[in-house]
Length: 602
Ligand code: G6P
Image (cartoon, rainbow, N blue to C red; front, side):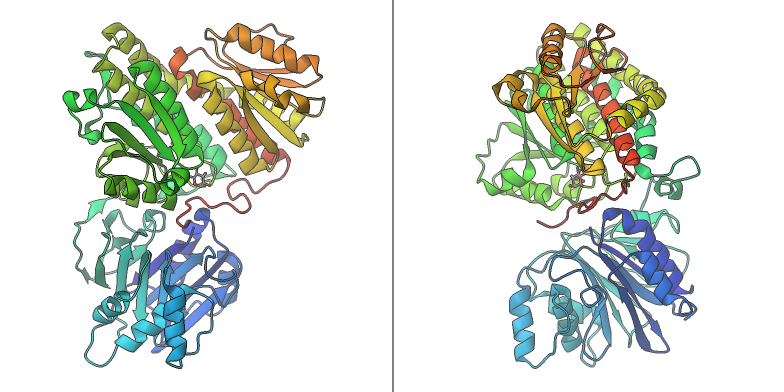
């Protein structure tokens, strides 16, 4: 969702800001804008379109030689996604400009107060109110930082913001509460962004602002509570490169390496267990856990479901998953002996963050499973497992989900080995995990065949995804992926539930993707396929078992993994299936309509 950039230094700020905004496009947005100071005047340019439209509008005006500026990509919350509501917002005199992520909850009240004082508000946004309030506080002798602090005293809600004052062109003021903000430290220049994606091309030295922090940033100097750290990501990780046309396919193909990274140094052959230092629980504490509950949204929730199956199987501890959004609204019973796992690629999803905060308020034990270092959920949890998937740009999650499931396999192994999972069984899982990256690469090498299947069925208006037990969360994720990127209606069902209702929908125009792992349920799954075929339904089987060649209309074969780990492999052809259906239908694969990469609002 919304993205922020800021620059102060010696360079022409406009191209730097535009480039930063371009690298934030993947988050999803509906309008964009920037403000620079030129000859002591604020120049604000906004558009209800894309960053490219902003660039087009600026053409000719880009050589302003402004050396300070702020920019924004907006996902509408308060007010329509039009040009007037796009950020930056300014006060009436055009002195203060502000870009803001998050939501000011008492915006209506603040807007009414301002109107009562005779201020004419031009937009429908919460942010504009703040611009006027800061301007009112920025009286003679008051620093911009103090003016921002004073204005923020009246604000309830979340924010990551950057403020510019034309009377103080040697500084930007930044503030954070709930919405991420990162400073990039250059050589005699400073960058600000809501996401390191906009910084890595300039610098690897960054400072993640803490919640509640307000700071002044100058070209060669800043003061913050946290110390600088070095970002792992390379600028190339955020670029497509010559081999790919979109990030989803690039990220699907990065999975073997991404999973290898997540496993590196964490598998202990000698004691047949996993080492997850970040969760900070000793064997006695691990033993006292009586239940494990995974919380996440979207794909992170389905990954949590895969985690729950793994924990129950390997550790024999009751486990389940729940959408974080449901959990936070239903006044949950928080059990001190339950280990809660907050699952999130971005570490920013508002519903998941709120669920963590609710848990902490009730004394729950919560760890994070997060991909983005320095993100809100990672910080709030304080301990957990980093996913090490590398930057994920496509809205549809692929490699992060695989690393979530791989990390949960390690968590389940660890929990199992402090209980009744034998060393021999532990060893089997360790070896199975080690083999997975190459097995995923093997599945990916069959992409052409999978693409062919996808093209054959791309005209279907609806599709079923059928799995049972271990493969059930995979079926749900497969249906989700197809919906997200191709807009083909898809539903997932447990194989056993088919005959209790959905079978009524089976006919020749309702293809079913049936997941058949080579486990003890193969015979049951074969009979599911036969039931569908008997009603004229086309079947695509995804399997590691030796199914009769003519059983299904199309068969996608995957290598045989340890049965508990097979869901990680079954998922990969489903990603490719969704991708190639979407490609055949000409969809905007990386940025599906109406979806954002990180949903930072309710
Ligand atoms: C959004 C994205 C989904 C993602 C979900 C959770 O809805 O469109 O692809 O699975 O958020 O995101 P998270 O960053 O918390 O894993």
